[in-house]
Image (cartoon, rainbow, N blue to C red):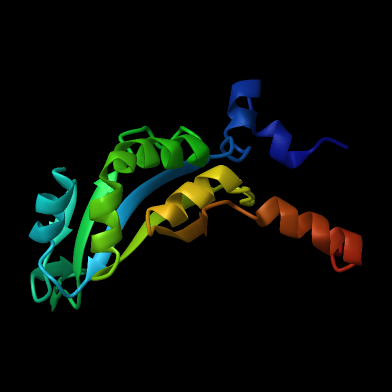
Length: 172
């Protein structure tokens, strides 16, 4: 007996379009930010660096068609690397840029929450060990860490396999 699904297909390339897309590429990046109530231009002046982004308390911004007001000020500095580079490289690049400004960072840390924000978009799972020397250096600069991890995978095949293992899948 022939497979009715296959008999409708004329070429192997047409069969390929039934297969799911290849996995997405994991993306990772990090940036430094200082968040607080004071004017972020004070950070620009103290560090002598231009931010990649900044805003003040009360600044308006748009989100999903609504105008909202910022509840805090923020000064943000990107690592300058592509999101295909490892988080280790992003953190190292940020520390390299911030290291010469230790005294200013210690002062800024008394008025702003300073962090290196590590962001990961992973197809399946995220696992990463922050280098201990980088942790020590960031701490000495009054910088903490924040981790935002997101999954953007399609878990369909994994769920099918789990159902099969648990005996929940019924073939008709």
